Image (cartoon, rainbow over all chains, first blue to last red; front, side):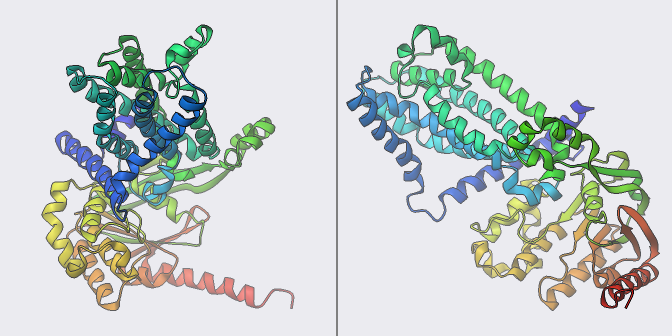
Length: 271
Length: 257
């Protein structure tokens, strides 16, 4: 029965499968487009802002950790920039996640469309911003001596899809849970602050003391982060991290979908 | 042909406030939390059964908390009954309250697409109906203006125009007909009459009897989650108004003086 509910919630109300797939596609496209439009409308610096934020933090960390604490990483500025753009996608998606359904309360209360499309569009919107910032990441990597490689052509879209799936699953789980447990909002913003320093962004994985290395496995975004750094800075796939990232993405989507299937019939009661 | 059927529907809300009070409370009073979870609850609908035929216009009336919104939520499929069965045949279109599903920084044109798709149309279907929606709303001149420049009445017109072009089998209206100027209200009434001729089932929920009297042939009066009375609009509304005025008298002339 639950399996049926999940299926129903994913495919909408139309009985005709082809219509419903078209519908689901349109729903996701239009909602994502809306998020992107809303973001860039009314701000002159719209696109620049999504670049300025990570770049500003790159300067801050460069001064604090590169100049003052002298982190032993070559091309530290480049290393920071390559890490901070994927991180911005992660932190924005997870930070917004608790309020995705709450912000659409009046819709969820009345209209029976696949509500998880709201999560897809939110994560997708930040993903679009990430994709738009790829030239800056690539430029940075080139500036610091990487050579453009064919691995980028395959690696960038593949990693973007994996990161999208990971964030979708996590955000869906967070958005569902927050309706029943409103404290989660605060907990998530604390968790993001923790996660940032537990992810190798300002330091490299080689600097982690031997005994602590396995703990990185517990961090759901560490493998994808390592994969981005490796891809941009050495033009290679880091297979163990890549495999871990795929597993995490799969588990995350499965868990988020399962939780959504369990809880979504209660949404309208508690929202 | 039956359009909507409730068979012995009971809807019971657990009290979520224990968890929603926050983590600290839940952790400090775990027993209290679990017990509260099980024992407390609010019976929104208590063993309610009714059937509504295709093309009927039925009004639901009752005080706040009598179960009207729950009934509407069950019909729309956003809620599931605790026990019993809810059947709603075909496409259900809720007429949304002012502004929900709209984004006020986007233009009327963009909002028609977003809203139409949220309500169950594909992009192609919205495209096909776009002209009709715009013509009906009489907002041609404002189509490319952001919605925040619209008046309340204009937003209501846009919302009704979209809902009116969804080709619903069941239209759910949660008291918003009184918005918009007289000219547009008349237009809405005409559209609703046209719907009825085409066999669309119309459900109107209100605690004011005026709209219901004008539109509905049958009324179901809910009180504390049960059907207090049902039947032809005139009779039920008369009884409801009588009960209301009795209550009013009770307030004005307290017993014992």
